[in-house]
Length: 465
Image (tube, rainbow, N blue to C red; front, top):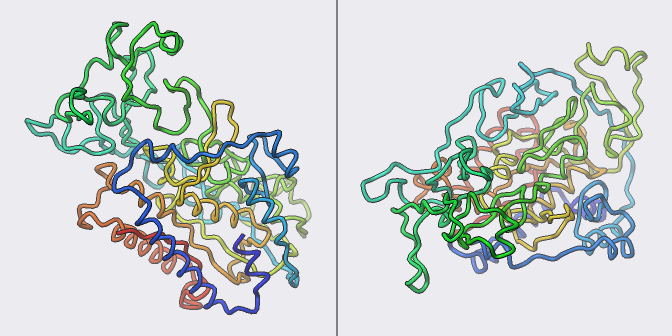
C-alpha cells in the first residue's frame, strides 16, 4: 500500500515522506489515547469483528485464498481494502537488480526450536528459547513472588494457580486433567465473590473447583464440551478460550493461529511465530535460500535469471547465488530483525485479539478485526509481499523497520518478564526504549542507516501515555 503511494508521488522527497509517516503515526497515537481502555479486557477484543463469506468474495474479488481472505500481491487483505489497492498500480521506470540468495547454515539446525537465518547463519529462536542454537530453555514465570496473603503473587494477566508453561508464561489446566490445553487465565483460576456488584475476584484464593469432576459443581479443566452444551454439567463462566490456536467455548476446536502472511505457504504458524520449512527463513518464511527450489520463489523474486551452470547440483555446497531480477522503483528493503521485535510479541500474546488484523474461525475461515493496532501488521505484511521489495540494500530507495510496538503496547505489564517497573507504568516509555533497541541493532549490524543518517528509513510507531 505505502509503496504504491511512493511510486505515484515519486516527486516527493524521501525526507518529506518519512515526516508525513511520522505525523500519521502521531495522529493514530492520539486516537488510541481516547479509544483504548486503560486495561485489557476480553470484551474489548471481541466486539468489533467483521465476518467474511467466501461466496461474497468470489463475486467481488476473484483472488481468494484457502481461508477466505482476499490476496493482493501475496498478502491477505480485507476485501474492501484489497479492491482499492488493485486500482493503485503505478507507472514508474524499471530497474535491473541483483538479488543475493544466501545459504549459510546454523548450528545444530537451531535444535528444532528456531528458524535459521541463512543470510547471517544465525538462529531466530522461538518464544522461551535462547542460545546460539536455541538449545537453552528460558524460565518465564507466570507469577510474581508470593506473600502470605497472595500465594501466587500480585495480580498480573499471566497469574496462574494451575500449570504454567514457562516458555510463554501462559496458564493451562495441565497434564493431570482431561483437557490439559485449556487456559486457566486470570479470574478463571480464582474465587469470585458473585454477591458483589460487579463480581470481585479474590486473587489470594485459588478456585480448586475448576479441576472438579463433579458435574454439579462449576468446573472447567475436566468438563466435557458435549455434555456442557447439552446442559448436563456445570462450568465456570469466567473461563474463556483466550489464547490463539483454539476455538469453541471450551477450546475444543484446534484452528489456525495468526502469523505474518501465514508463513507464505512455507511454514507452520505456532501461535504467532512462523516455523519455516527447510530452506526458507524470514518473519513470514518468504525468503528463499540456495536450498529452496527456484520454482517456489516468491513473486517479488521472479522472473529471475541465474547465471550459474550446475546450480541444481551445487546448491548444497555454496553460500550464495546471484539472481538478476527486473523490478519497478522505488525499491524497499525490509530488515529481518531478531524475533523480539516482532514474532515473539505475536507468539506470546495472552489475548488472541491483540494487535492482529484477522483471526480464524472454527472452519479456519478468515474473519477480520477492526482493531487499530492491526494496521501495523497489515502494513508489514504488505511490504513483505510487495513487488517493490528487494534483498539488495545497496539498491534500495527505502528501508522498512518492522517493529511491532503495537503488540508491545497492548502486552506491556501482562507478565513478570514484560513489566514496566523501570518505566513508571508508562507504555510510551517502554515502546520508545523498544524502538531505540531496534535502532541500535540496525546501526551496529547494517551499513544503511549511517549512509543516510536514517532519512530513508520508515518506522510505523504507536505511542501511548
